[in-house]
Image 1: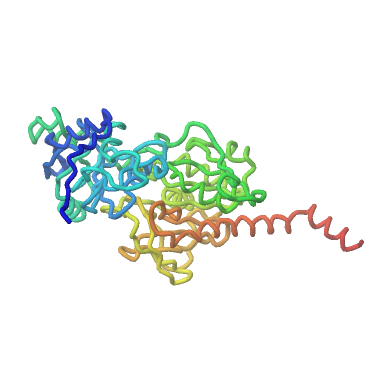
Image 2: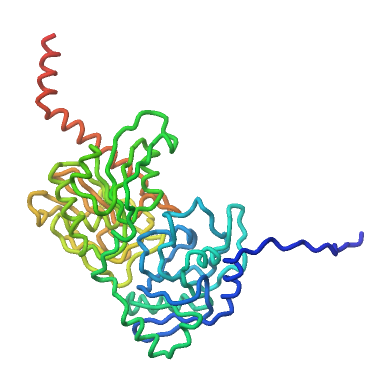
Length: 425
């Protein structure tokens, strides 16, 4: 039977202004310039112009939309080590915050068109729409190896008229930009007003188990959802909140989120957490919240050579001996003794131990207080879109709040009196 080819022409779908701009950008020269003078040349991806920040690499093979909308990437130029980016497009459901936070985006092979049933638009059109400058067609393996060998560093993406400057002028522009050390960014990415995430909106059909205050230092959308799914009412508060703001919601627990910047600049958050710990309110922190707990206990923090970023980072839970594959995004770490329990430098908080360590480089990945109800991890147990090995940590937080409530009830004079009255009856 002969094969008949149709001569019908399918009309192209309407091309938006952002998509037209993205298509035009693909032939526009662009350059990635590192502060040590190394230059990688490619073509524009997303918006054209200049983007300055810290060049870092992320090793996830999926989840690029969650990556670029993670507030922890504020003021960073993200190199995706996975070679093919944009093939599944973007949609409104997978964003981890209200906007894209990466300062610039660096990919090797950008998809010419998205192909996924959930896609609502192309990634490059989204970058254009939000004014995010990127570069494509560069050797991201070579960039990653350079950053691993020489450390993360300041960088700039230049395209359009900006790339016409001399190499020296481009490097000088990068050298004039602010370094990540000493940067205070949590307040820039946090919400301005408090809001509440209710368990009933996420499948919980009973009364809430507990209510917590969560400080948004760059919180990802899935974090309060993971708690709400377990019956926790989450009051999300701005990064500038005080102990009075926390006590106003009468929380059973206290949480500090991930976020960008240097933890050495988070003096206000450290002061707040110390007040919370003094009041014996159960505490759980992730990422930036882990570093703040470390500082609140009196330990220091330091900048990692190239950080941990991706959804395939191995971590050892030292209590159980189990290995977790985790989602991470951080460039700083806590400087605490790795072996055994130790007295916290802030002695009123008692003993503390390192509960989790990185199997790649022995970096502190978790802290557990032994005399007060507080623990934290350096990685992201909400893991969107990554492994869920660490989801148990949300349950551990619930157990911590339940135990604290029982202890408080047992220690209450009113409870003791009522118990004696009941015994006499």
